Image (cartoon, rainbow, N blue to C red; front, top):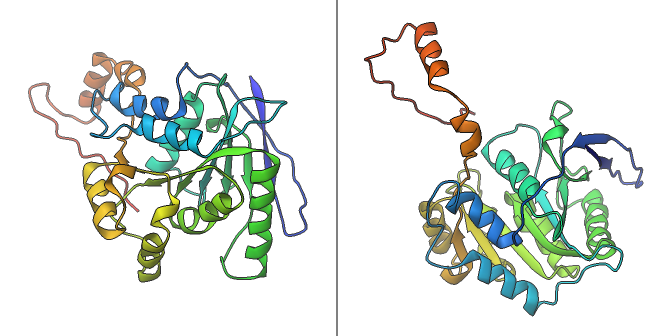
Length: 276
């Protein structure tokens, strides 16, 4: 077991320590290759015609991603708007952090809002909370400075963002602070976007070294709506842990049928979704 800290940074830079215990294990492989394997190997699906691995590795080399002398591993900073409800994107993010090869990468997670009920044992890296309500007030300037200082002090090599505030505000700040590689994860067809969001994504489209879309439809949407270079947009399906799925034995399915009064010869159709 290893302890990972949770730090909450206020405008006065007060740090509140919080210990999060969890195993730190990761198989070998590069960051780009490992995230692709989560879909291609586990799901046995082809991610996209383009190679996510080559795109990210070339970007990192071209921009001269650096590592600290004390820790030669590349530092990846994941940024997500909030950790209040643990949905599909959050679970994929946690699994991605967990499965990164520990001998090559170290990870940190930054968010702007958090729910005390979140089970931090799912997060296998240090978590930093920088409270943010708006991106255009005095506190936002202070948070922007904290992000800049963190990126420079911790020698962040790759920033990977999730959702609008992280994509359009925190990611560009990290990029302009010297982070060599900026990756944006796109999870939907813009259901939460406003007109300003759409404009922002178009204006900042050249800042992203790579965009990872969760499906071919999302990839097409990003290319058309945000006018992204198709060569920079890869499809990365959500991974499925087949070991956990196979552990659900046939007898357990039989018990579920019996519990729900479903005869053995009746087909069962299941729809999986997230009701908000």
